[in-house]
View (cartoon, rainbow, N blue to C red):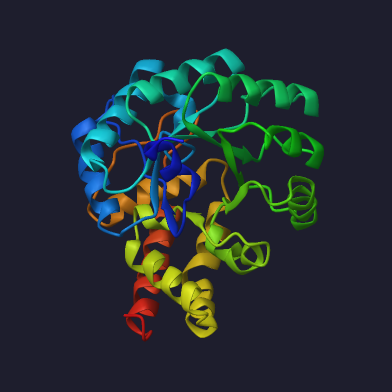
Length: 309
């Protein structure tokens, strides 16, 4: 196993999912993307995942996808692993995988196939082809149209470069059955929307690394929560959950697509605009933007009141 591959196989800590910035006319904004990456890197993430769900993979062209991955690899310059999202139909995902490897990515996050829902055998065939197209490590992402049976995951776990399962579905019984079926051969990552809310539950299954949307626009709160989580500081975790994460999740659930749009709105509120989201996502409504600003203020106030600060 190469050094690059092994970096993606042993992810730990707080995992960053930066946005993909666009100009006011909707074009890719790579200078802004690099500034955003600098801010994200300052938080010391265990890895950076670009062109994934938060990075609006589904709205990127093949050329834009490769440009984003290459820009991230060059800008991060080995400071932490850079993993790239791949998705869509099987042949599209294969093309993205090959392009990401050519651009220097350390690994891949294989997002669910777009729209189509297939049986376990079809999912296995899809991810086999993606894994066979690259030398990079591949992380499966369970959510949406890709909910795996334990047997399917056990079959995929036999493939050398499939190394982890990121879960965004939240069925703890299913995850335990998957762990039993695979003998723990795949690392498990908490990939729930607003993953901090589920951090303790996933830790019980051995998944202590998690993705944090808040890290992209509010690293002070994301970092404080992760430190409290690592230290077993339940008081600080409960405070941040009550003051920031629970209200954020409630706002997120008001409107489809807000899991991404709120991150970009949060960046704008904090003076680090990354431009609009692309359709079919929609920018945050004015009244929700005001609500988000208040939630951000509550989060920062909570951090200032904790020993972590």
